[in-house]
Amino acid sequence: MKAEATPKLHRWAGYYSPVNRWAIKVLTRNLYVFRKTWTTNLAFNIIEPLLYLAALGAGLGMMVDDIEGMSYTQFIAPGIVATSAMWAAAAECSYDSFVRMYYQKIYHAIVATPINLQEVVVGELLYGTFKSVLSGTIIMGVIAALGLVPSSWALLTPFVLAINGLVFSQLAMIWTGIVPKIDNFAYFFTLIITPMFLFSGVFFPLDVLPQILQQLAWLLPLYHIVVLLRSLTLGMVEINLVFHLLWLLIFILIIFPLPQYLMRRRLIK
Image (cartoon, rainbow, N blue to C red):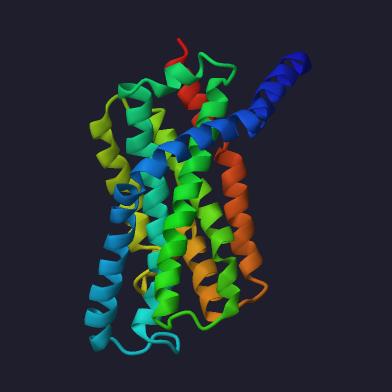
């Protein structure tokens, strides 16, 4: 029994090893492509969040009283940054990764080199994280230019966005390793991403919800990211932020092997 457990433990630990130079080469390959298509890549991830900020902040915000001592626009701005980064990572590692894998056969070409499939998956996760950081940082720069970022703690935003990117890149890649066709990604965005978008404290404080929904919202990774970004943006840095950070890091470490395992099971017959 003990002899059986040891190989399984080694195999599980092996899923943490592909964070290496070969995965960086996959990331570099994607960055070369991004350099040629960056305008169309960023348009959706930047314009739509700004429309939300304008419509809800300048429109709905005129009819909403101050929330927790701040204007409604200032309240939702960090959440818009978080959701922009979430959508960027989720879209990249779902639809775009599926296209590279299934239609363009890029994964098949890469694994014909010394790079293995696990390293390809990790490279894809890193690219999704890059897209998350880039999209969120640009939106943060916009809200800072609008005078909605009063604290220098906001300089730590890219670090939180990197965590955000890893979380949602992994969730999206897990779905990519499961679904048989591209149409099935609609379920991922409707059943997983959209509920987080609506019930993670982006648009209203969670304490207005019933207690059971508040507890369920605490399980959503986006909720913790929104708390971190809002606290950094407004300079409300307290020790309890460590628990939000730890929750996210533990979540990342636990699910990190899953996209590798599922993609390997899918592609290697």
